[in-house]
Image 1 (cartoon, rainbow over the protein chains, first blue to last red):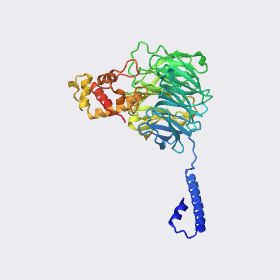
Image 2: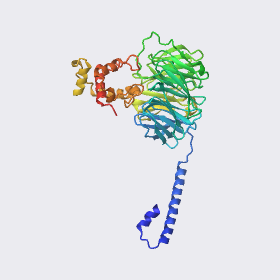
Image 3: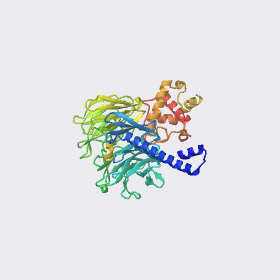
Image 4: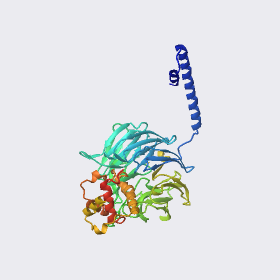
Length: 414
Length: 106
């Protein structure tokens, strides 16, 4: 192109000479380009892994920051991700790519190493979360509008399967609590229908669906235990939780903790608790009560409640430090400026932190020495030492919400 | 302003007692609450989530008094909680005006 531009500006006395000149110029241009790209590659060729990276959602701006959790600093950002209210993310199994699920139905694939948006599709009108399959090849999104689950190729984001949550003729349910499970399955719950569905994706284009009805009124979120065996949905519309043993799905869904809350006046719930990050310490699980300012302690061998721990407010996230020694809790408005830490052996609150207004999420580093906390109204992400509770770092972030570390790439259900 | 007064009149509360809208600082708090906390269920852009969309078109035909009462006392049998412990009737009337006028929509 350079050659022909030059050509046009000169007189043209000799066609053969000009043709030769043009060839030389094109070769020079090509050589120059090659050299430039070699220089550029040498410049960017500081090799690094992604195992200590994370993303934080900046929900008001439709972008994410990429965080280095070793140096406790931001190393890049990716914009153009749409409406990220209630956004979440999963990671490719190589830890390089994040799949971000936005409220507006947007599914975005981000390259953490180059801080670029590599693919994006707006696949529904209103969605709530997603999951990546056991083999890493499929990404599923759970949608409110139209209610159902859509499945995409993790490489290209091309559509693979559509699973409308049709529970009665023409009736689609909002879908919540979508997780991956061993056996190349996705499991999810139907808010409007009170059902749990298990989708076997071994034939990706023709999922085989098992449906479990009458699991309880308004399942609002669900989790899968870290071993991938038990899927448990919290019920908003009634007491108790619904348990499905994925090793023995033929046994059906059974109700656990049905005795909880009976006769107690419930307090208003200003934000739905999240069950993901179900805090498991030994055989005990710590879960948020609904409508009570308590964390419940459940014995996972009997599925009975064995204790309740009074806390500051309505718990939203109840997260175990990876070693299971501590459980960290944040709260719904108006108590969302605080974080409380429960010591697991004594079941006592050992620390109350005040990170600032609007604590939305917490994410532990994989071995638990630090925890990252998003503080929405302070426009900060804060890093705490979990042994001393000292604040190690404060990073600016615009209305931060979820924080997701790449270690999730290798965990069932995250 | 006239519309706001209309909302109060429709809401059936003692207009005399509610003549003063929330002050500027409170309005800012309420606007923030509407986006961030109502937004948890109704969407940051109020286009809906677990709860229904709250754009003017979605609320058309619903009396302001009903909306004010829904905010203050919740909807029993649904996930909508009563906000009375956190906001006053004046606050709720102002929020309803914001919603009906589309002033909060993005």
